[in-house]
Length: 281
Ligand code: NAD
Image (tube, rainbow, N blue to C red; front, side, top):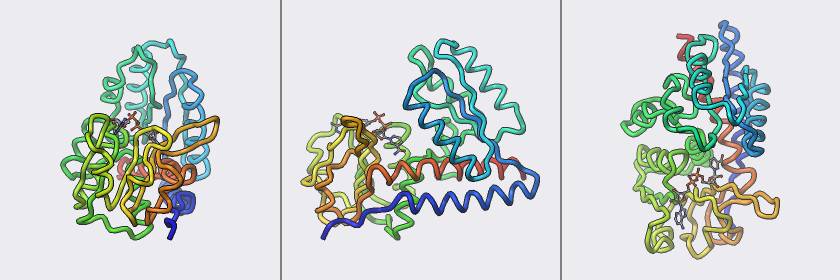
């Protein structure tokens, strides 16, 4: 039987509706949730991502401001912008769109963001909070994956979860979230040997590699939950890391597009509202 296709649009739609209701309640209490997005340079993909975030905020009743800096603005200008946003009481969430120009120190920039406004969850303080099981901001994509599993009543406890990819943005926080929910977690990466042997043991397989068709059907355990985080463009067509044939083997599968990507923005709204709510207290 082919896999159940997990509908990211529908699940994210419900979260966005909840977000809009929450934003309205906050507005009623005199708090207009406000996300500031800093975009350096003119990378076309980044511009699309930022526009999507602006649109989602607008629809949910969250104020968003995009601060655009030229590619050659220099790190000092970016530092000044972040310091201003940190100090601005009316700004609840700050997001620096990545990647930054090569001459900038990404980690140093992320460390500058006030951890309580760090709605992307990339600040070391929030990374530490996640690792130590404390509440903080969690990166939107892996958080969205957890919400998707929840929406389909997929229990995580005691399952063997295999995450392919160890980035700070997806792989590592994904592994940590699954571990915090009592999965047995294996993290695979570019130096992993016998990858397919490991992925075939996965009850839950998360692919976050960035290579179209990387996960083939023979790498999937029959009935497994397969979460495709990858976003790749092949001849202009958006595709994930998992081959379509895997749907014949998996029990559940997230599509690309229409899967995890939808969840990411929904979780950004959720994190921004959390930030606004905490400030309001
Ligand atoms: P990344 O390049 O930082 O990390 C890729 C990971 O894949 C690395 O940890 C690397 O070790 C691993 N890898 C590479 N080759 C491998 C191999 N042969 N075997 C096993 N592992 C291998 O990328 P990222 O930022 O983590 O993103 C991964 C993918 O997810 C990309 O396609 C990206 O576009 C997508 N993404 C999607 C969303 C979303 O909202 N859906 C958000 C963030 C990233």
